[in-house]
Length: 178
Image (cartoon, rainbow, N blue to C red; front, side, top):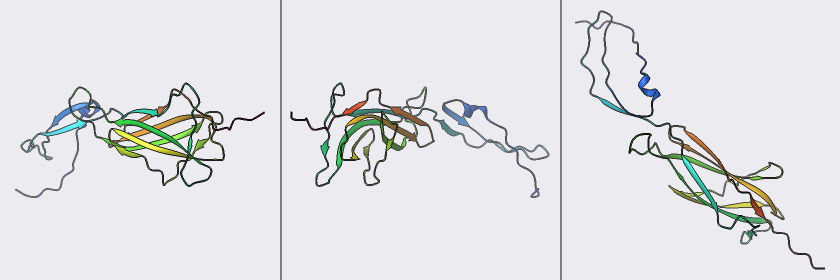
């Protein structure tokens, strides 16, 4: 027996193209046809299910809502956003998906399409599956219509984007006396 220099080639496994649970074994064959024993079986999980998101504003969205000012701050208003984010089971199994890696929430001005930046000091409080965030709007008057967008990514890169079907109408304009 010598230590022959050889090349390595791999046989492509189409099994990875299908979601679910797969068992894989490996066998080595050298240049002259000597074969190793198969490796012990390994279980491989293929997760292609994106995360699921639901979002709720703590108010009846069929009518305008008034935002509360952020305590101790001028021209800062708080829109509380709550929801759930989860990674569903791997298709056709009872096995958990890879898990939620990240969640991004964004508020968009429905009239202008302007994205209202979230301050870095505003982290969402996430304990999967629940999250809540006091989204702070930096403006003298936050009145307007907004769309809530959310994006979740699981640990293997499956991505899901959500956009609120209902607009959030904010009316913080003081009534005019006549």
